[in-house]
Structure formats: C-alpha cells, structure tokens
Image (cartoon, rainbow, N blue to C red):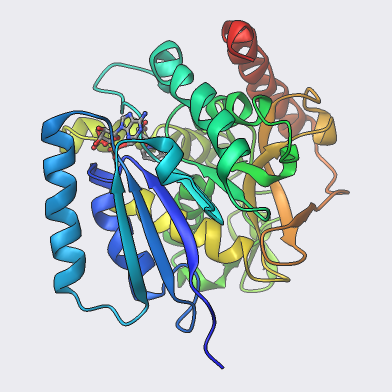
Length: 327
Ligand code: NAD
Ligand code: LMR
C-alpha cells in the first residue's frame, strides 16, 4: 500500500539554499523513494519574493516528480506550518564578507520567535523542526523556547555541513576515498569555534590519528579550515554556501529519519560533554525511531578537545546572553 504524503514546510523558499533543496526533497532524496510529500513553501510578504516563489513552483511542476503530491505557496506562516510534519527553517539573512554568523543574531533571531510559536500552535502532532538560518544553534534555541506543546528534542540545528566538510578534509589529507572516513563529529556551535573532533574518527577502520600522524595539522590547519570554510566560500563566491548547505540538510533529515544512523546534529545539550545545559550544541547522536535520537555519550576527551569544547561552549553561552530578551 502506498504511504500517505507528509507535509514539509520550508521557509526562505525562494532563496539560494532552497533552490538546491526543494527539488531534492521532491525527488525523494530526503524522505526516501516511496514517501510522497506536500511542500508548504513560505516566503516573506514581499511581491518580489512571492513572484520568485511562483517561478520555483513552476519549475517544480515542470519536473513532474511522482512523489510531489501538492504545494502550498504562502507568505503567512500560519498557513505554511499548518499540520507540518517537518519544518525546515532556512529563511533568514545570510552573512556577507567580513561578518561573523553571530552578527546576524539581532536581525535573524526575531524571525525564530514567531516561527517557533506558530509551529508549536499549528504544526502536526509529530512535528520536527530543523534550523539552518544563521546563527543556527541559537536561532534553534530561540524557536524551541517558544514552544509549550513540542518538547525541546524536536528542535535540531544543522551542523552537518561542518561534519561533511571535516570528512572531506581528512580524506584529502590521508589520500583516501572519503567513504573510509568515519565517526567524524562536530561539537558545539556552527561557527569558527566549533570542534570537528578527530580523536574518535577512523580511517579505513584505524584510528584517524594513526593514519594522519601530524597532530599539529589536526589541531591547527584542519580545525581552522573546517571552522572557517563558510567564510572562505563567501570570499570566493561572493555568496554564502548554498548547494552544499542544501545537501547537508538532506543528510541531516535523512539520517534523523533512519533508525541506527550515527551523525552530528545540534541539540539541547542538557549538560552533556560539558556544555551549558540550556544551549544547543553539536554532538554525536544515534537515531532511534524516525525523527528521534539519543546522544552518544561516553566519548572521552583529551585536554585539547576539552579546551576546544570550552571555547565553543563559551560562545554559545554568550550568544544566549545576547538574546536573553527573545527567550
Ligand atoms: P537567501 O538570502 O538566498 O535566501 C533567504 C530567503 O529567506 C529569502 O528569499 C528571504 O526572502 C527569505 N526569508 C527571510 N526571512 C524570512 C521569513 N521570516 N520567513 C520566510 N522566509 C524568509 O539566503 P540563503 O543563502 O538561502 O541562506 C539562508 C540562511 O541559511 C542564512 O541565514 C545563511 O547564513 C544560512 N546558512 C546556514 C548554513 C548552516 O550550515 N547552518 C549553511 C549555509 C547557509
Ligand atoms: C556556511 O557555513 O557555509 C554557512 O553557515 C554560511 C556562512 O555564513 O558561513
């Protein structure tokens, strides 16, 4: 028997990232080749944005995706999030050259107050939320803080782009196929302070630190390249990453709906790995049932790892203080 469609709300639906994202959701890359979807596409109430959204919808029609069972185009979040099983919060301002993601906090943070509230009121009973708009961890915390019905675990933020970047960098350094690089996890903030932990990573089944013995490279250029990759892309392209961000969101949600998958997502830390209990921090998780996860605990951290985690935690706590009035 064929499955009934799920409702996927996407904000920023006429933006750069979503232009790479929506077609892949409709093709089955996010929820599987047998899961029909209804896309609920949300933009700002600005004529240019809504007109552009109509164009995107025309192109989605023109792909004749068998799994795409309907589309809602709206500038009203109450309509867009209605009965949504998944809400993908992409819509927000991107940073430009010379900015840090935290510089977006005051502008973007307020978007997530109202969206968190409305999702809590109108989304489906099993609603899940994934936040991409920057600064993603803190925006996710803001959205979750508005919810009375949905538990905090339903709100996750994306650090998967960082995990994918880290995997690619390690594979390149080791000169191996990247599929042999495993157990790469991102701890902390989606910002240059993040810690792309290598201590528990494996390459071809061996500890990564036995394959890449240059610990100065691992602690220095590797962490720096992954942490500052977003800025490097902005400097090169003049625009922030889009296709790779969309791809990472596909990975984030696909793994979060695949029981047994092990991956990094930013979640309410509850004090694990030494993070402040109330911040959203990247951590390793194992998906339990579709949309739910348990944090993988018990990875031991050496002094270097502990200092990296302390630094990224400090930044998350500072971001939290900067938006205290929005919580
Ligand atoms: P963009 O400017 O191309 O598109 C953003 C879209 O969001 C625009 O069409 C805008 O009209 C819309 N929008 C703004 N506020 C909205 C609201 N309240 N409701 C609905 N739509 C709204 O930007 P982009 O390049 O697609 O990036 C989007 C966000 O994702 C940025 O904040 C960017 O920094 C972030 N980002 C995060 C990651 C990550 O790894 N977490 C990676 C890349 C980009
Ligand atoms: C990225 O990591 O590419 C995004 O968060 C965009 C940015 O501002 O760096």
